Structures are given as C-alpha cells and as structure tokens.
Length: 295
Image 1 (cartoon, rainbow, N blue to C red):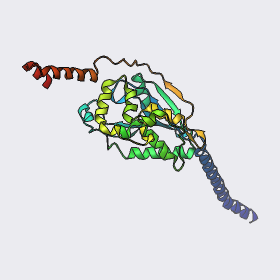
Image 2: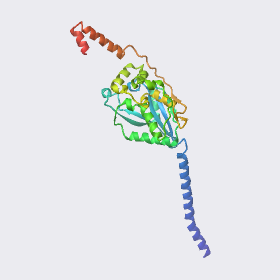
Image 3: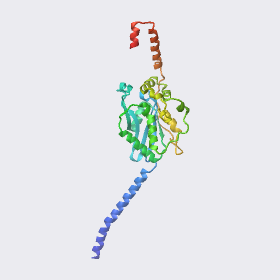
Image 4: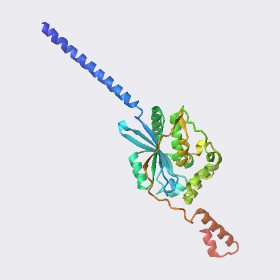
C-alpha cells in the first residue's frame, strides 16, 4: 500500500515539475528576447547618398534612409520615388506624375546605383535605439500611404524627405544645428539648387521650369535643404543631446561614370540664337525665316 501511494504521489508531481520547467524556459526566452530587442545594435539607421548621374531626375544625386535589423536579417532602403519617367516624359514635364515612399532591399539599391557607375556613401545616425525604432515605424507608415502624392521635388525631394523623417522620429527631442552657413541665409532655393547643376544646364532649365516661381519664395532655413550635398553638410554640424548626429562615413561604392562637361548647346545659347533671329526678322521679312521662327 505504501509503495502504491509513493508511486501515485510521484505521478502527480511529475506534471507539476514539467510545468515549472516549461514556465522557467518561457521566462528565460522572454528575457533573452527582451535583451536582444533592447541591445543597441538591434536596429541600425543611416543615410545613403548616391553621386549624380546625367539622368534628368538624378543630376544632383540621391539621398535615402537605410534601416537594418541584423537579428531578423532585415536590410532595406526607404526612398521617395516617382512613377517611371522614361515612358512618361511629357507627364513628368507637366508635373502630372505621382510620387511616394517605397522600400527596396538594400542589395538591389546598391546593384542599381553600381550599374549606373554612381558612388555610394553611408552616414550612420547616432540616435538612441528607441528613436531608431520610431524612425522605422515612421518610414513604414509613409510606405503604407502609397504612391499617390503629386510629384513635387521642391517640397518632397529626397534630401528634404530624409531630413523631415529624422526630425519627426526624434520628437520631442530636437536637433541643434549650430551656426548655419552663410549661403543658406542669403541665397534662395533656386540659387542653392542651380549651383549643384552647373554641369547639367538643360536639366536645370527643365527642373526649374517644372518647379516654377515657388522656388524663389522666402522660407525657413530647414526647407532649403533640397539637395543631398546640403543635407549632409548641415547634419555633419548638427548634434543631438550634445553628441554628433552623424557617425563616421563609409564609402560603399566608388563613382566610375564620368560626368561630361557641358557643351556649347545650352539653353542660354539657344535662347540667344532665337533672340537674334527675332531681331533680324524685324528687318528681313522673308517667308522662310518666319516659318523657322514659328517652328
């Protein structure tokens, strides 16, 4: 009888012991998971900057946000893009294309820029882990909104979009910019952008024609960051809670494409020719010249 009671008591205790061990395992797993998600390298954030190419919409380079989570093997780039321009040039010139935030695997981005011979530089963001998570959530939210915004390089260009995403994710903390360079204070957005397109006179002419007179209107200094070069220039001087906002830059790919020097066939030359023809036509009213001016 005693033996039977002993065996029965052990049979009752075994499930309790197993349940206790299972609970301990779950607790340890939760602790390990929490430790991983709270480790400083759980999420990495950086800015990718590609050098210019001779394509109309990338003559000033391109800026985008790279987000990584090594634990889950995630590595994606968030970038503002427009609908395909190649097959819809007229729609692009008329400002009818749509744009929005998209997420693309980093490997594909690097391969695409590399095939164009463009250089790629990465600038890590020195911001707290919770802010990096907030940044990722913000970017995901922009992707979910879809590509349904009217194309607007001036107010939703790549550099300004990256800048706004970072500032939003850092709230309620704010970035300290220090002293702004004199050119941001004294020059208009048109002048700032134009000087980055000296090698692309026709691109500059077309883009500024699309943008219109809004580019000449006064605006806050932070809204003058419309090209990637200026984005990095400003953020390299910025601090967050006394610490530099950007980490040490890393070159992911060197530029191999050679940007050609602008030739004589520029908008200024063409407009000058038409101006001279218009003057000549005032004194020489022949039909061929009139037809040429109409064309």
